[in-house]
Image (tube, rainbow, N blue to C red; front, side, top):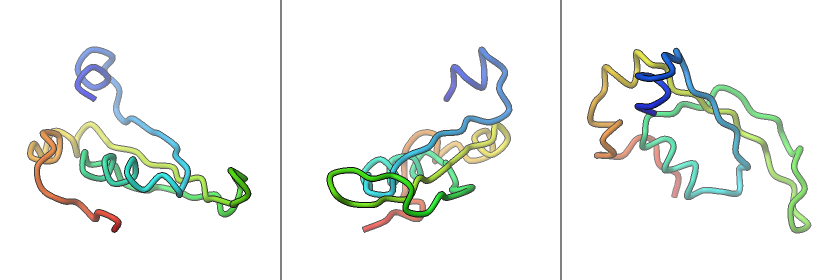
Length: 79
């Protein structure tokens, strides 16, 4: 994220992920990403339908919460 915000001067970074990838969702939330949208049951993987989740982090949010960008603490982690 530092490269995107500091060197590329981006205002936000967005990603998309399948709802079945719980470990990645938790990792992104721990880094400060927030869910901004969802396409319901649009991805068929191994005979299951999954949502496609869109997440983003804003430059201002990343700078205001240094403990999230360092990876400490929990932030709405899914069990």
